[in-house]
Image 1 (cartoon, rainbow, N blue to C red):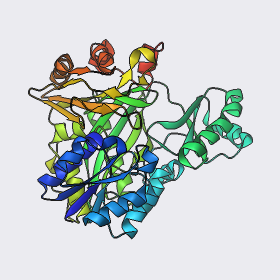
Image 2: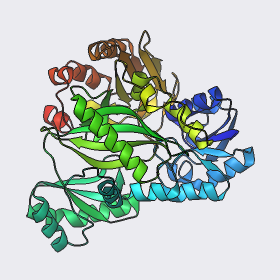
Image 3: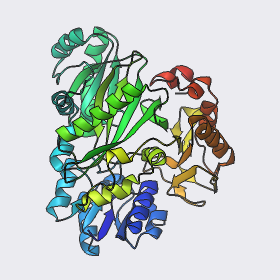
Image 4: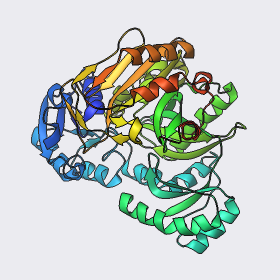
Length: 447
């Protein structure tokens, strides 16, 4: 592997380019009409225009990406997260074009991208899954399945992910009404109308485990993250390790993630996601077959460069460390700073960043794809930056996060900074006593 095409934009494109350069690899950036002056375009060795501003005509256009790789002599493609990162068809197109895909095999993406198939793989690996059903095709099947599972339930798109394609249902009447709408939504969003049911666990925490697997069959984890502070199942704050997790539960949940990765013949970086009940039981919910937005907090507590490991693995090299060589060192928290208006139900607020002053100091890292004067485009995700703060303990990491927010200055567009400042002062956040519905209960008037 010599030259990597980065099939993404924004902060993750910057992150990949830096890791590739540190590994001695050349990089190719891609950009749409809206991103001609993007920071990642300037950092890469070469940059190629791939289409119009709409994602469907640029970053989701696999043919344009293959042609960009061919025209620049790239021999590998790193998809980042989002866009084509979990699309098996795109991974196959890259492979068919002779390009190394920095990620798992096509068959693995297919299996773990189908939530019903992923649940079955977890069962085979001896990993507990949330009680639920197989695919339900009509109302009668759904009602019968819900009676077995017990209300409340979640209607979930089999091809969904990232919190999308989920509808909570509290009764048979709601289910009969919601099923056709859920199927239509799944068809429109994922080109697959298959849905299934899961038991809705009250007061659950969202715990996810970062794993790495290489071509020699070695699978390791870099411990877990708690991503329970969510708005409409979209993460706002993540921290590592999960606060207050008993040592036995930590060992069991990390071991379960490794077992599942081995079961499906995983390759590369991935995240196995679980729900943890108030009683301490955990259940598998899905696997993301890519690098995650929140990977920096795992890096902060372990010292492992996850993107560099991805590149090593894709080149056929072994993981650079063994499981007994990695441990938890302190704590870290990540805050997603988005161009959204909290006073207007978090509506996206595209526009020009007239000022962007980033915080610094010990234990403070900021990942961003923007500088002052750049425009936050209406065509893509609204994230401006990720503020990652770490320390020798959780209290220090949170204190540094509060100080970082005090230093951060973003002008030109409304942002979520004020929400993060409020949340870090909430007693439940300070105590680590949050769950996936906590934020909705705290701020129902704005969400």
